[in-house]
Amino acid sequence: MKRSIATIALSLTVAVTGAPAFAQSADPGKIAELQRTLAGNQKARPSGAKGQCFTGTFTPAAEAVGLSKSAIFAKTSRVLARLSVGGGNPKVADATKAVNRGLSFRIDNGGSAETEFVMVNAPINFVKSPDQMLAFLQARLPGADGRPDADKIKAFTDANPETTAQGRYLAGKPVPGSWVGVSYWGIHGYTLTNAAGVTRLVKFKMVPVGGEVGLTDDEARGKPADFLVDDMKARIGASTAAFDMIVVFGRPGDEATNATQQWPDEDQRPTTRLGRLAITALEKNETCDERIFDPLNLADGVAGPTNDPLFTARQPAYAASFGQRN
Ligand code: HEM
Figure 1 (cartoon, rainbow, N blue to C red):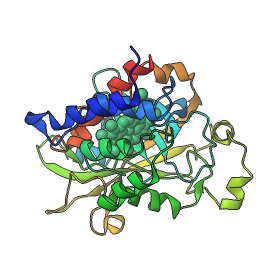
Figure 2 (cartoon, rainbow, N blue to C red):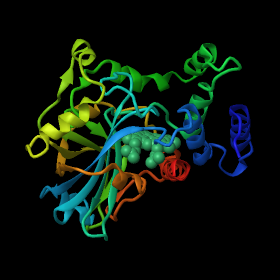
Figure 3 (cartoon, rainbow, N blue to C red):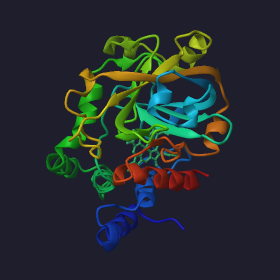
């Protein structure tokens, strides 16, 4: 049954206000549904709609074993990865500055230790909670004239100024000239637990082995709409089609559950390299489309922030989106 935008918006409001048990957490399935509505109800993902599937390998660094007992750090594993361009438009030009780039990957060392990360090329997210995400989307619903209401968006932004920080971060950086020429962040505070039971708070970051590849705005304007896949075809096989996985360590008092903020002096803190992700071949997109990349799927020894409703909403939102796009 088709429902109008107004009906969806109304049912979303009811879902939020009428959920006494967990009032701080909007229904992830409804969020995904609203994302899809705003993206024009197409078959593609409503976020990271444009992308390419790849295979690769993850080779752990010796230091990783002392920090995490996860089996992904025991030996080299195979990887399925998807590199994407943010937003719900599957035809977005690859050189668009205002949207993020995504790196999703599943490390699989034989079935017992699948671990998945879904990262973007910014250290912060644009919302800190499912409720704020829902309100962000609702503010962008078209009005009676079928167009977004600039006043409504401004009122939301004025009341939620932190939701502009990710956009400002991206606007201040060069346009990525390659999917493997930019850093990606896990954003959430994760914990690593080693065999002795010692647990450390960390943030994950994937750093391009070949360094940053950035385009000026002029260079970006000259790029073909789909240059990122061609760039990958040219780079695969070279040592630079790879990322180092590093962790930044948390300190007592660090906020682990506000994805719109970095930790104080996060970029200056000591880091440890946990391994290297190499992208080794293009894969047909159907392989990446037949399951979600699931941020909750973490082998023992790596854990996400289960007290952060933004983190825990992601898997159910992706699962709902998977159902809606199939
Ligand atoms: C409540 C918070 C969030 C919601 C509701 C949400 C929702 C979604 C949905 C519905 C999809 C499409 C999934 C699919 O159809 O397979 C998606 C994809 C994606 N999201 Fe999120 N998201 C959230 C937070 C985040 C955060 C914090 C990040 C970055 C750290 C992120 C990065 C991505 C990426 C990279 C993709 C593309 C996945 C792929 O390549 O398959 N999302 N998101």
